[in-house]
Amino acid sequence: MNKVNDIESLFSEVSIKNNIEIVDVEYIKENGGWILRIFIDKDSGVTMSDCEKFSYIFSEILDKSNILQDSYVLEVSSPGLNRVLKQEKSFKRFIGSKVRIQTHVSINNQKNFLGQLLNFDNGTVSINDVTNGVVNINFSDVKKANLETEI
Image (cartoon, rainbow, N blue to C red; front, top):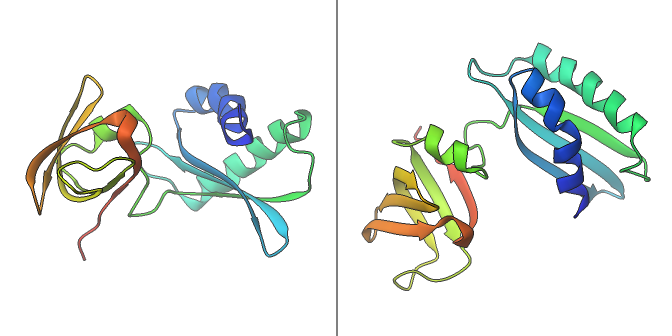
């Protein structure tokens, strides 16, 4: 297991208890230092107060664990308008929304898709792609997926 998965597992109980979703976790080196970014969401939306509260909670949990040996900066924030879609439940939650999906493999000579998310069922994402119409994508073939905001 890698550190990101370990961190997600570490926060699993506290996120369920507090009705928040851990949307994404990034542990990356930037400008010579380590950054741990945790993106959270909840049904009513995330406030600055939520980010502050969970920054404190996550920091305490991390301090008690031995997952991260290097010094790091912890950032807790909302996933933003173009939030990442990583989990099955996120795909189901945003059916009807405009999404951008990148795949590991070509489907009809295409790896990048943009359109309305139609369905998620039995491990298959259905999207009404602007180029090829309705396309079914195996969830395991999704490399990256985000909501696409229209401004």
